[in-house]
Image (cartoon, rainbow, N blue to C red; front, side, top):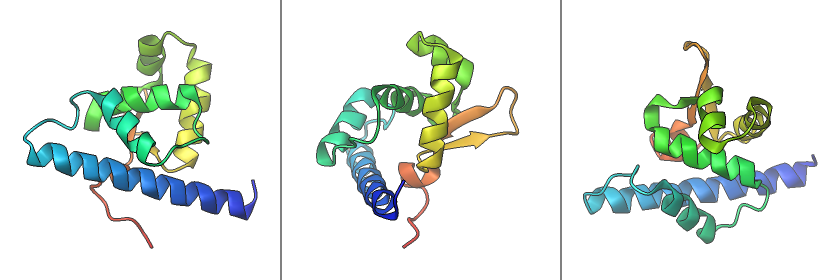
Length: 127
């Protein structure tokens, strides 16, 4: 991956994070849950900045993790939910982790994955 590609991806992820934070703030102001209709949340954020670099499996994993909230989900739970093999979920999770979208909690057994605090708007972006 070239430096330009990484920079483009970083800008895209920051834009997506901003869109998700904006959507979360809107839902909070309206008294609705951020976990209400995660497909809509992801669709709205993606519509504001299409993430062409994310594949369909990665987007499916994001939806499951958004539904799981702060508790996250294990690789097996994600695989069962989407009806795919663990290896398929593993590949998607590793890419999302590399992009800084997902974090892995190694203190749990099995390991738990969740959306990063930065993506959810709990942590400021480093600039």
